[in-house]
Image 1 (cartoon, rainbow, N blue to C red):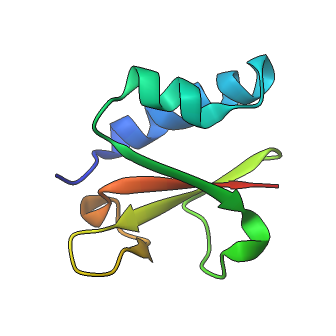
Image 2: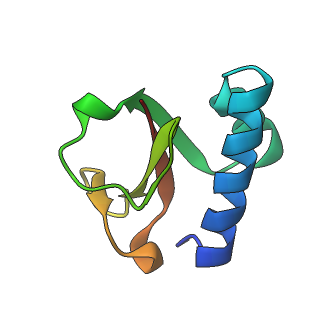
Length: 86
């Protein structure tokens, strides 16, 4: 199921709070949003432009609707999120 743009903005706020609190955003996201796929990596591992960017992380939209997951610029196709640590 695609992620709504408002939901993605909500995730960004949760991420900002999680980085301030303990630096472990995946734990906070997985507790709050079970069933949504989240991954984390270093921004240097991703060549595609981020959907959102701030001083602690980049947020990438992931489309895993086909055989191989890929980064997508289209929020309507996003089924998961990749957090790129800076």
